[in-house]
Amino acid sequence: MKKTTIGIGYLLGIFFLFFGTSANTPDVIYWNGNERLSWADFEGNPRWDYSDISALTSSGIIHYAGCKEGKIIYKVKAYFEKKESWVKQEALTQHHLEHEQLHFDITELNARKLRKALSEREFKCGEEAAFDSFVQAMTDNWQIDQQAYDLMSRHSMDHEKQTEWFYRVAMELSLLEEYSE
Image 1 (spheres, rainbow, N blue to C red):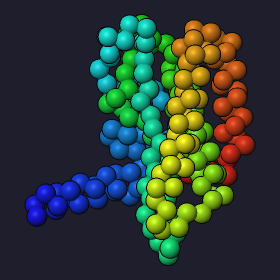
Image 2 (tube, one colour; image 1 turned 90 degrees about the horizontal axis):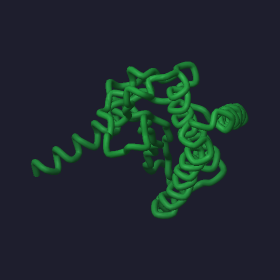
Image 3 (cartoon, helix red, strand yellow; image 1 turned 120 degrees about the horizontal axis):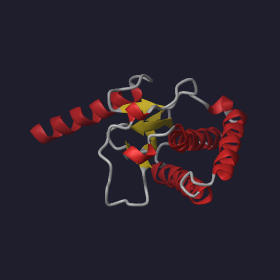
C-alpha cells in the first residue's frame, strides 16, 4: 500500500510541476516568446565524450492526457531542462547561444503543430492508444526537425544556413501564433 501512495504522490507531483502552473521551476523553463535562454540556464555538466558537440539543449514536448465527458483532454507544453543542458567553454558565444535558442524555438514550433493537429481531431475516451500513436508521430517529426537543423547548419558552423533556419522558424511560429500557450 505504501508503494501505491508514493506512486500516486509522485504522479501528482509531476502533474502539478508541469500543469499546475505555467511558471518556470528551478529545473525547467517553459517556452515563452518574451524570454530568451542565457548561458546561465545551461546548468548541466558538459559531456566530454561528445567531442564534436560544444553545447547541448535538452528540450521536450510534454502532453498530459486525461478523460472528461467522453473525450480525451490534453495539455501540450514546450520545455527546457536546465540540469540536462550544458555548454563547454569554447562555445560561450552569442552565436552558439542563438543556435541553442533556436533548438528550443523548434521545440515550441512543434508543440504548436501538435496543438493545431489535436485541435482538428477528437479522440474519445478508450482511444488512448490511437491518441498516443498520433502524438508519437508528431514528436517523431519534431526530432527530425531538430536533426535537420543541426545537419543543415552544421551545428551552427554554417552561418548562412543558421540565419535561414532562424527566419524560417520565426515565420512558422508567427503563422501558428493562435496555437501558442
